Length: 385
Image (cartoon, rainbow, N blue to C red; front, side):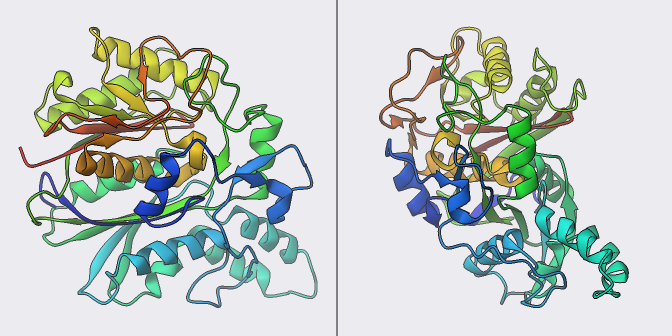
């Protein structure tokens, strides 16, 4: 892969619907496409809200039947890969990413394994559990799965990093998908990590995240038309300080950002805007703000988080941030963070609120992702340098 590949196509599925235009429209609005979890059959708890993809079928198959799909994460992945219109071209490797993949299917497999009515499930389970979403790619002509990255909520950018390391010529696709799952909702709820009123990234009164779902597929080419965004630099680092909390000082995130800047051969002052991980939790947002204050001691570029609008899409979150950063660079506009009005923002950040902020021409946009276990990633998107 070339050092700075061109982003020639992007396909997204989120609670906003299908495509980048639908997502961009929702990001400009202070209304949010969220619903109660029990309304989509995920939990009986009326007080849990989620950002669900509209119309997504949630039925499960213990054995793949429909084009390799066993559950909603696979359906999302198939949607974005088909939308990318790459399946009919020559052989293209797909670098996959997910966080919990088809967790609810995995639970169903283990339950069925103990059922005498399903004696074959025990033999099928190991293959099914290994890569539940990889089979989706194998059923699409012209595509083949290179590998699947599991780096919690930084998985998508880790997959992109691996794609950039490839030395073979030709295009690449990076794709990530995660769907809402009972286990994920239950785990975050028991940890007290779900916000009472959705997600309020970087606000002084933030109290937790909004669980979402989505999928992203990005095609990378060695060359493309003038004016298309490029991945200028991508850095990853693991601080491994805590199983679920980020390093309080953000040392791994800072290393990832500085690595991305160095690979892009730009200074921090060149960056025009930030699409931050911004989960709305006390720990994550404070850590990102600390890191930004150190990297930009005279004041960080304007920053946004999309999670107040479409939720935390788990393993797809980092790649979705990359897609939004590319679109922000293309439009020269950084979308606002939900909600428009807050009592105050965490110190060290210039958070975009209320309406989009115009970005300076030719300045790259930086996106970040953090994951459980200390995974950190940062990517810089912009024009040819």
